[in-house]
Image (cartoon, rainbow, N blue to C red; front, side, top):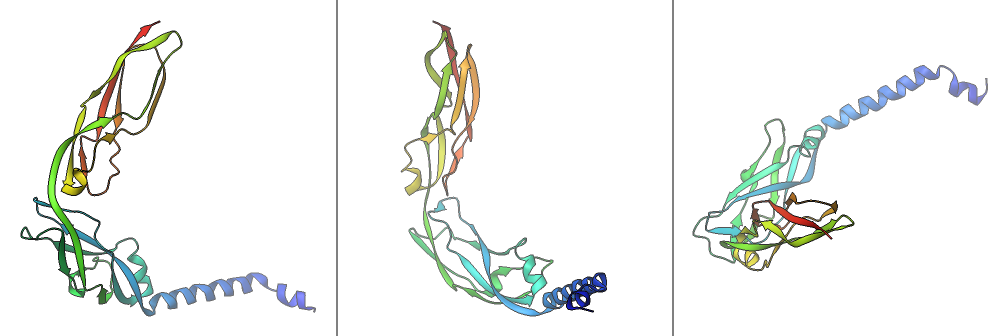
Length: 217
C-alpha cells in the first residue's frame, strides 16, 4: 500500500479523531486560568450644576480567571460607577479608583487583580443651557413649472443645547441632518432630524418641522 493509500484509508475515522482532538483541546484551553488586561466602562454621575467637559479617561483592569469566563467580558463588560461631588471645582476633579470599585457581571467568575491607572482626572465644567438657532442643511426643489414661494419655515427656529458651559457657548447653530426633496408641486411639511452627534451636549428637541409653499410660474 502506498503513502496515499495509508493516508486515505479509513479517512472518516481519522477525520472524526482529529475533530475530537480539536474539541478536547478547546475544552482544556477554556478551563485554563489566565490573566488578561481588560477594558473597564467608567460611568460617572455628575451633579446638576456640573458637566463633564471631556470623555472620561480609559481605565483597564488585570483580570484572572478561566479563558471561557474572560471571553464573557466582551459581551458584559466590567463597570466602575463613580460620583462627582457637588463641591468639585472646575476644571478638573481627581478620582481615585481601585479593584474594589469594579463591578463584575453576575454570570462571570473572575478575579480583579489590579486596575490602571489608580487615579484619573475628570475634566469638569459648569453646566449651562441656552437656545441656539437651527440651520437647515438640504435641498428643496420645486417641480418644473413651479417655484418655491417665500422662505422655508422652521419650527422651532431655535433648540435648547445643554452641557458643559465651554462647549455650549461655542455652538453658533445646530444643523439639520441632510435632506433632499425634489419635484414639489404643493405646500409641504417634513419632519427633519437634527444633527445630535456632538459629544457631551444634549439637544432638545431632536427634530424640527420644515414647511413651505409652492406657486405656479
